Image 1 (cartoon, rainbow over the protein chains, first blue to last red):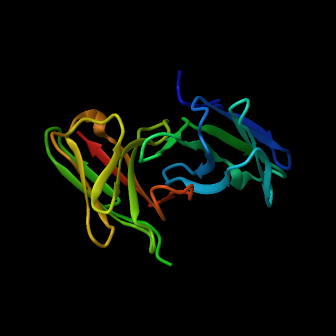
Image 2 (image 1 turned 30 degrees about the vertical axis):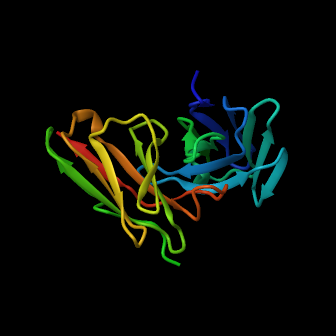
Length: 113
Length: 114
């Protein structure tokens, strides 16, 4: 079982719609969760991070965390063509001194004008 | 505030050669992590450096090695290059190895092994 799983997509939504991106993780003790956006050929760019159960909103982005279900999601409201990118879910592990980030393989989002 | 910088941006090497990639961490960050990202995949953790010592390692062979310097900059060295080493190599820095602060990535080095 992969440690962090995402639907690879591609996910297509029309401009102005809500895009919903989902992620599950296997390490029940994980404490911190991150969403990165990566444009083709570029490096990952941090969008949101969430540490507590519930919702966290930042502009058009909302991160949702449910630790009991080991599930984290990202909602993008009023999607724009410029949001077209690969979205990476990352989880910081609970054990070991490094507590490195483990990434999913990403969901490719296309916002259609 | 200066972000994470990596050099070179692109590199082409031949199988069997050795390569050194460089990274300068963001101001105020003392922890540097290296990731390998193959095409179509998420970044895979190689190792992390804190106070000039390796502080955790992913599932990579010993021919992947690194250094961290007193100014927190870092190098990734790969010996005996293989075709599968072709990837985007990402350096990321963070304020601390222990807290939950996010990683901030540099622009990466695209390595092609022929």
